[in-house]
Length: 106
Length: 435
Image 1 (cartoon, rainbow over the protein chains, first blue to last red):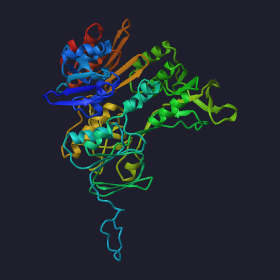
Image 2 (tube, chains in turn cyan, brown):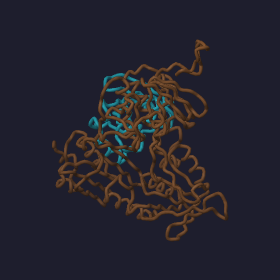
Image 3 (cartoon, rainbow over the protein chains, first blue to last red):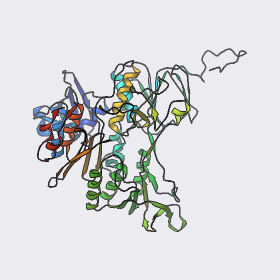
Image 4 (cartoon, helix red, strand yellow):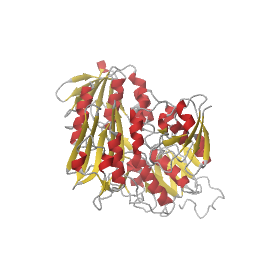
């Protein structure tokens, strides 16, 4: 089962198991991970599901499309090179992903 | 409650009047869910019952006219929280119970009665009852295939019919109508949109944006007819299923599905029954408290003081959006935990129609100037709205950078000078000023 390890801005870690095909955002929200807001439910409209992906996990992820790239310029905490919107990251069978959530999403 | 006579001593445990405890949230909606979640985040430790009249776990509505209709997301993806989450957070989820009457005391406690005869006692009450689709009352309106799109069952009914349909008439050129029309067109249907008014999207956007959407949809092959209304729906050979839509001018459009999206009516019946002040929604104060001072009402069903900085004193507004459901719920969560926090953030909205991604920041009411930014090549279009030189809102199509810049500026009380904003090559973020 895919697993996502969410570390919050204070360093607290929460490990959540998800279903292949679901997004990292959905997995977080359904389980109440507090660092992910996701107002728009994954339609790439709000930029409140921002995560920082651990560098060595980045190659496993799908490339970023233009809309995600532009939305990332509007996040509450400024983007870094390893920023992604977690609604665009789909879980695959054996994925083990480490992400950090920003201090605030709004 | 005076339920017992002097001759009858009160039974030790009277099942008919259960102990009044905890918070009862009526409406398992976006705002109802957010209220429960925010209360737990604030440390509210009383029992919470989140009650809805649908036979589904609480779900997200926006996708119903888009991804869910098109079959690109599964119903499970629309569920807000896992069952485990609700159990862990001590929130009782009640499905399929329709509240018909509430007995409420002056202290805010009471008992809600459902149509199935169940009773739900409470110490405090929250109304997150939303709104219902406005019905089109014309001849043939009750034929099979004349549909609305407000909840999951509506969407399932539409999906169930869509396979056999070739021609769809959408009545209403607002967000719901245009989103559904775009989805159905993408699914290969022959779609006609009838709009009663002279432009699309009614009051939600300005003239320029309405005109942009009209041209863009027509360029994508959608048949949109403004200033047009249906006079009746007819079945084929006296059958019970809709087959055609007749227009004022006598035109007859074939339609195996008619989808009506002509706005919503806030659900105020329960509020009226318990004597709360109602005026285009349940009237609440800045802290989401209704006129009894104890019940909270939030989201689509609530009429609140306009939360946008700089609005006229006494100005009221009822907003229908996800963002409002969330922010208003947070205000109510503070109220219910004894704190007073005002509405935070700037109202925003989105609507995805075909490849047109509309994002709206702020409310454009009362604007005196607009600035257009167009990048034809990259398909970007934004309108900024100004009042007395101050930016108050923006409609942005496929232009998230503009949307984000305006949303952030509004949230920080900043301005984006109009003259400089008119150059679409200039990023708005770079010309934002502390006003």
